[in-house]
Image (cartoon, rainbow, N blue to C red; front, side, top):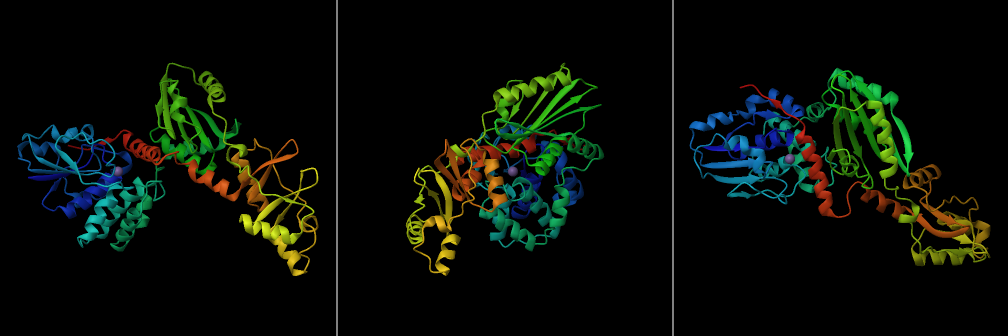
Length: 461
Ligand SMILES: [Mn+2]
């Protein structure tokens, strides 16, 4: 017998990979995990007959020749299947999309590649072989891709993920169904907590970070609080959210946190209490403490431990090209072209900033043939500037509110730098990822594992 299986606690990407593996390797039978991720349970239950799973227990009487493993390379996550296998040395091939992760399944070879979703990689193989899918199979696979790539927006998404998604749409995959399967808030009590939190969340500026905070007491534990916290994160868009819950019945404190800034390292913040997780997503559970006391103490901890937010002086350009107010508009125009800028701060005799001249001001002078007039006659005198400690969030607001893309930074009446569009975009594009690609991959992988780690639903028989 030849078999295919994925990791324990099967999630969407695992199911998507399995449905495609069944098409790619029809002489292999699918074996299901005895635990299914609660999020993915609906898909499993609705499409059961498309998989035709056998149970790990059924392997007891079989002689297994070849095994295909999808969406994991970790021995720990497939041990439930091997428990029942009698023969010692089946051949094993792995299709896992984290080939950098250490593969510790003895004798196995990973044929996978670094893709956003494992399903995408198998879809590419199916595409190349001219396989066709039913619309149900395409929908299952499409759900896997959307789930593991954060709806095609995580930083490890590659061209192949998008091509696979396009192909699955051609095969009749339904985005309407995908959307409904990925809905994280489905229970009434989740909705109730969501509404309560929306009314009570408090925004606080701590060392330049916009921090969202809430403290809520619950009668008993409610499953699925993390998706509620994520939903609030989406609505309020703070730099980080610390949601503290106190469950009265069990006297348990639960802290769920999400961040979108690498400067706010949640794992490090919660480790002091015995919690942890990852840089951008972490949680903590504590027993035997009073909720309100803990919350107060926790706020102090944040004030003490948060590293100050990135501000203008960290990202600004310090070699500022300027022009004197007595120079001609013509000189300004030539200089701008030379330094490849669309605007220049204008300085007076004391070296202080007295205005700003941009392309539009130069056009105005050109239209009336006044290119030899002094810059001071055409510059805009209403200078929007700021100080070195202004946070990047504030810079973003100033840009948007005033329709500008540069902000001169002034200290003690002296121009010390300028934050340009380019500086801003550089900062923004790096803010969600981490310094190096390696670390970025780790974070994405960690977020995917977090999804997988939440406790599974054990299936019948
Ligand atoms: Mn995966």
